[in-house]
Image (tube, rainbow, N blue to C red; front, side):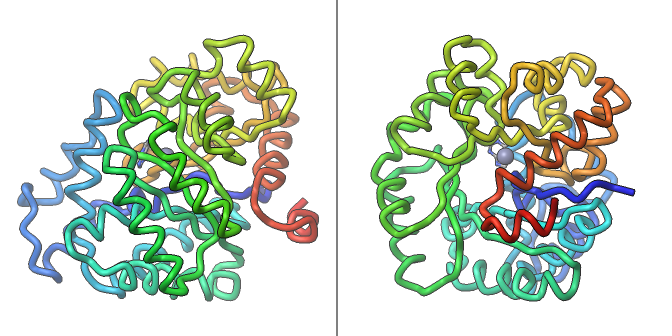
Length: 319
Ligand code: ES4
Ligand code: ZN
């Protein structure tokens, strides 16, 4: 039996499996740089975050219709239910679609169609996070958020992802002010490849409620003490960390050290189709390779639920 968990760090575009990509390309008349499933499969070897993003952004160009976005989201939810996920706060990189001419409504309506029936269809409650690309202009991000707010689209929060180093949180103060002024939840990737200062600045300048990844916080004892004292949730993704070389190998992953420090960590899957697995695969991997104990697993599961944006009643239902 799997413990009930909340998935809090999941990029919907990172759930596109190679078969889906090849099928959607054929359906939509998109010419990809690879000719076969085998050739595509051979590309999933990464040296760093950017080498992965380069593949992610090419592959997501197969998404064209509202139905494509709905099917992407449904396929994810079906797989997540099998992994023990009872609540999912999924994100979409909306600018990766708007920048190539896909209307906001096509993305949001398609994703929402699957999320809105998720509790009935898959037993998973959901929230939607719109993630902004930090390697594109802050003005564009503010423009997209402004249009999203005006459209009446239902979403619960914003995030910040893509290439981290050189794109500090300070660039996005206006975006986060706008989001918080509109009652949205706020999270941001920080400390994956970027320095501990980006984690501190995400808290101080963007006032985020959770940090996605946060691994490099461990380099700064003062920051660790603060994260422990404030119990800031860190959504950690072990298989992602290995595939993007944030850690050398799974045996070296700091998840147990993070727990021992008293950090509020939980385990998530990031881009499961790219990194070798969903939340259950991440959990099995840290049990097998890091020696995570049953007590630690229970703590990680509980943390995932408590770090969610569910209300107290929703959390109690999952504990
Ligand atoms: C991402 Cl692992 C990761 N880091 C930053 N941005 C991303 N977008 C999708 N996956
Ligand atoms: Zn991520």
